[in-house]
Length: 534
Image 1 (cartoon, rainbow, N blue to C red):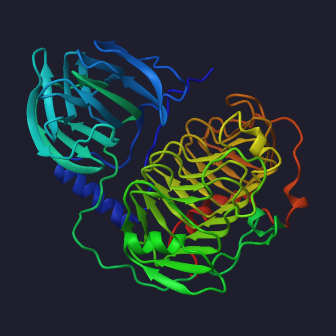
Image 2 (image 1 turned 180 degrees about the vertical axis):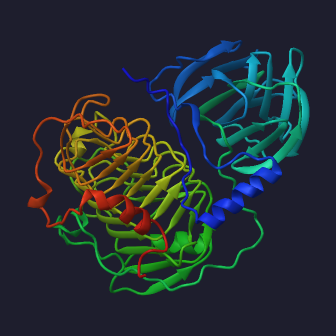
Image 3 (image 1 turned 45 degrees about the vertical axis):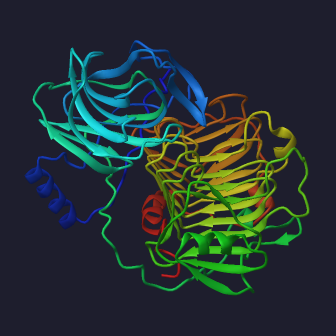
């Protein structure tokens, strides 16, 4: 049986021939790796074990820390864990949450070219308030370079250590902060470490080239364009149900333009119909921000969106088992970039209904990119581009939430680009019918559509490229039911693992399935931001 340890989160871009050639020349001149990445190793610990990791010192275990993570819980040892084969050039990336430090000069780190648990390069977060790039060859750690940084225990950070030839580069949250040259170690494994410090580690990824780098922070002009949201949804968001006929968002109300966090948070939470036009990237404090009923939130141009936090479409969590009269409803989210969310990028919960999430670009979040759960229904997720993230889209809170979810969670997913997102594409519990059609899947290394906990999924007209397990109703936990038809499977994609009967989505709404052979080109050209109104 295939191991679920081979997971990845790789970027994907479509470049012109001129641009690609220029980048390759620049990379060669700078001694940098090319842009053709191969995944060497990955582990997100969602299988509940740490098989393949060799440990020295400390107390290591897989725990729940938001999601499954690898925890080093001791602070009285020099603790290290290594995994993988012996590679030369490598980029090691992981999410790291320092928990506690025992004494001065302590750090938690990712490791590269680890020839043993006492010989390696490291990139660490120090309790001295710095990022340190260093080497260890049998004795104490040696610092090669450092940079000041805010290191707060209990906070997640993204660390990436790149070692190519004799060049070492360290990145904090995808921004390069340190670099050095060293000739001591030429190859080795990847690893994690806590020098008399405890930490959680997650989403470990090793590639043979560097990952994405945050662009320079010099001011850029605000995006140009107008605030447009033409047309309406296809699928469940168009249905007349639960006292709402279709999804119109802020139609009939005023329009406001926002370009600060305070303006955004205030506008999306106020009562009454409103169209909120987002200009530029707005960084909000970490957290989830409530969206009230009858809202359209739409980005201007192709460079507007939200970073640092996410949108919550729904009432606070409770144990009610039927839709409350004040459930959030009639919300549209379109044409927005989502980056670096501290929790979910978009969360729909507590019987929220008639929600349309369309033409967004979502990446590099903490938990889910688009999660729909706790009795929510009549939702359409369309023409979105998701990438550089592991846990993509969840439908259904957990295997024990049937009281709220059975008979609900009716969601349509169409014309989305699931771009190297390993899992939850979507992962479905209880919903029926869940309609997944005309999406483009590429290199989803864990699973494409996972239909479980007696959910009923209709998966049709999709294009699967390099997806070993494209559709499954036996992925994990209680089984579900699925019907897979008229899909295209190319480049070593597997076959669907489907059984059972499912309600037909056509009994709820009319739709047309595009030729699946045309889906790849259509979705790559039409999904994401900057596409609506053009």
